[in-house]
Length: 197
Image (cartoon, rainbow, N blue to C red):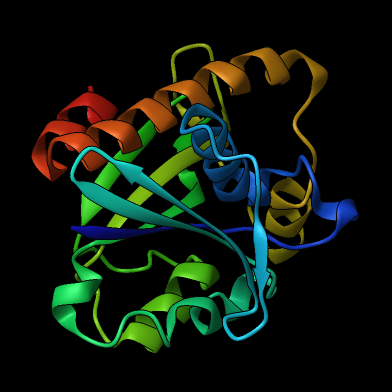
């Protein structure tokens, strides 16, 4: 199978290390694990791309150079059927999940995430895989402390990870990459079981 894994985020130095760039960070981590050393700029799909073979499958890693709400521009020309969409994996931040947790899902709505909304609109289906990585603060009991109001949400998602979160982030990215590797080597149900455990 030919998988397409897209790490959502915003291009540019000022967005590096921000919560909204979690998808890009995950795809970078996966690229390192797969031994990918070189990314190429693909002007046609406005993205940085890298290719690898994993077992019997090939994978195309994509980091869109469009801004988050135009993410669909990066995949529109690559995903032209529902069959191809089934092998599309969109990795992104999620305010509905606490920092440290993640969920893999398939055929779900955008849940208010503008990057995902843009992709659904571009590929004309919700029938693709999403790896949602939590970025919300939580209480000691694990209850989410989600920011309220557009201004607070923007401040939270465009904020950088705190120094005390950086070592946890590395562990989270390792698990996300392992889950994606399982997907590439095994199948969606095994990867989902691993990520959602």
